Image (cartoon, rainbow, N blue to C red; front, side, top):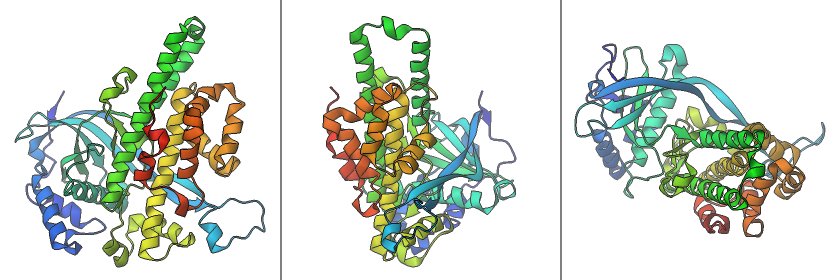
Length: 415
């Protein structure tokens, strides 16, 4: 059931986007004249009147995940590292912030987009979420506004912002085009639970061999297309001087999780609250509150100049994409509970110190992981090769997003 937006919502017909945008890390006033005109044009197309929306059912809530620090590998209490070592011997510590996001269904109720389904992302007001919530909302609006004003057009692999408004209680409501309610994490969960159910019922033994092979082939194709879409979105962001900085299975939205419909699959990146502007002018201006951790890690890794910091930021996103790759290569191919994102990350980082070949040997000895191993073995180990490159301990040796897309594993036809 759809309801009109409650009376407690204030109407920002002209100034909502300006209000949020200027509270972000960087206002449009510091941009070039051409960039400012693009941003103003994009802001003018956003729906900022709360009366133009209807709110539907509550879908749930979640906390943001982002990198909070880097922890070095410890081989002993007296271990010492040089600045160069710090750039290589690093693993990510991922933490969940205090800001809880609520999701609602909805639709546009008037204007040219009338009837368009939207997904509301609601940030709590300062009273509930503090200044961090406001900064995250402003930063997400800033990032989407900038990316949607690109001269290269709209990227189909990024979620589209339709508009937004603020309530009298300070909540920030961002409205995105509803291109699917499932995430890559949901897909992986459904597939792993399906494997468990089939094995519990003993169906695997009675399956036709051809049917088993067809199911695995479909899953491989679906996962590969999911990865391609996510990396295309990331490549577009990097080309526009924007980092994601919160990339994971839950931040990739899917329009379908039906493997038979893989030809119509369009993955889209969301959750840009921690996105960072890595344009050289922004790097020269200083640090924003939400990006302080990134630049501390960059300094610890020996990245000090704007060019080095930009390269570090891009490599940081690629590392996160590598962990997403590992997640999608394992979880949908294994029974539920065998492996999850955190246990897989610990296995790669803590147990095997980012030695992907050693990780493969370990997984090969566990029959429960065999389908995942076979997937990464395709193309004479092309999957493992790409995973090692993306998780290279030295950030300077990680590929850029375009190189990931052009890797032979990503371009190969699934046999």
